[in-house]
Length: 541
Image (cartoon, rainbow, N blue to C red):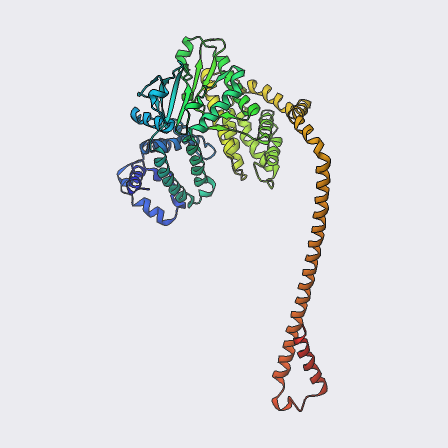
């Protein structure tokens, strides 16, 4: 970390009075004295609320800190709601880098000049963000594409800023509340996310998977990846044309059916989570467009697939059952499912956890069902479960973030959206399929050929397994015999040690208390026998 960067961060820290965000009374004395002595702390006053000052400070520090704030805004299990809301307004207001630099990166990565690669390559960028920027281009076969290029030098900047963040996280961890907030773990989670975004091959693979999963459904369109032009720092995609999801006026002018559009968004989310177990986890308005060519059947267009989430079969099952149990107000089942899934420790008292969940959920369910927020329900659940030592897994945080985005978009499009009415039939059908005959038939169809291929080998495998078990049994018996013998030796050695100790004490006492002139002439036969026995016991192996 350069001294200049460190001084700049300290200046911003004091300028926006971020010291008010720290639990000063629980910080070490040395840290409190350092904060107290910051000059700008005395020159600046904390006028705005804490969330706004934190947002402005992150914007001032640049792209990496902005990205961190965007991801931090999804951790509503850690932040106050008003601060998370303020951080959600963070946008990538980053000046574009020169088109000539982008061209140089493309040529270095692909090993050819842009004139050989494209019929046209526009040096003026279409858009610029903290990690990359996008240029339009034309292939020789007439296809319009966009070329995404990683910002030059950004990895070095990210590594430096991550070092600063980790240092601040370690300082925050020294506070009394540091263990609960887990600041270092949050920064490390951000590090994994942002480093993954630097690999455009990974983003291309995510886009290709999402496209393959959803293309046949006809409700979401993911642009085609042109793999022959894609490298780690360059991604070439089919260019799409659509109306931004946030442009309500343009969607209204196109006479879009907003109810259909909102309900499709919910179905797309639950399909990706439960059917495909692979969901786009960065569905903010800037990444979502609408194909308005058929107003009665509007189609979503999704871009920027750098962040995706996935749930295991167990997480899918427990999440679906949890959501169903929530809306049936079966809080005991919710608590039991959390314990069974390992989301909270097995030692958790189910009745106490059930009472805590009930106290959170009952006020929510007093509202009309169409006003209940799925996403906020999960947030409150995670906040409650944290009191019972629940560690929120990254895939659940991504799920929560995506659900909040989808819900926000849906209600912005169609305020009367009843998320539960749209989702409940899907969830009930999915749960039944996991335990019913369909699931068994699907498993047989999926694994049957493999089972049949292995069937001729089964007798030999069973025979080998039994032989191995017999050998293991013999080995275990031999090891047990050796352990028994070793214990026996240890017991004998222990008894011998005690015997020698007693004999030594007797011999020393006899010699110590016998006058020297009587040692060879005045001892009785019995005394001699006692001393001789002690000496013999001492020397006996």
